[in-house]
Image 1 (cartoon, rainbow, N blue to C red):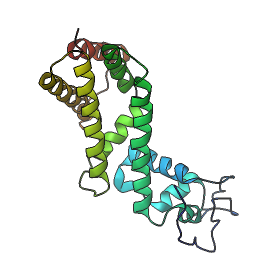
Image 2 (tube, rainbow, N blue to C red):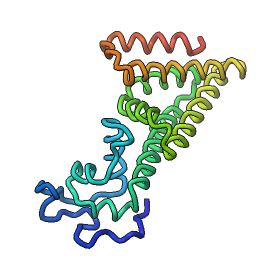
Image 3 (cartoon, helix red, strand yellow):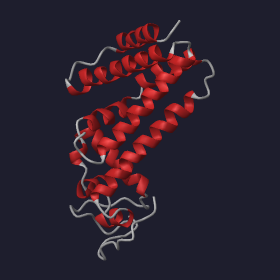
Length: 213
């Protein structure tokens, strides 16, 4: 992302290079921070505390820099949040869909999708946090796009696996509902996490139930 035209505060290191000490007396990190560093830090904070927790000062403290580094890249907190959401959306699209395109058999692709999604815990936590913030104007469009892309991908994969169009769409919705429901049980309703062996058996059961034979 191109840096903002806004001029950083004169007293701060504009590029994130270290000053003598942070506001709390904490030595600052050496090296320069990129816009991507800030966006990833914002995503980490969303995963831990939710969208409302994203703010410049706590992120600067976390990263060990002054606020000047932030204003070098972003004009506002909302611009940072938008960049973080775009990063999450783009990385997910490239990491998941890009990887799966190399699997030629649609049934094997669906099984690989189930396994991949089951073990991407950080992405689940971020998604769950975003679902809690759907009233935020920056969050809703991202969730809409991601959900549509996921459903379209599932429906197309089920079609390629031999299901009729309507049944493929129903199977895609059922699969996605199972995913969202599992997240709510575990991350929002704080259900105890399954032991690893039980979780792996659950994922295998889902694959056997939902992927056409």
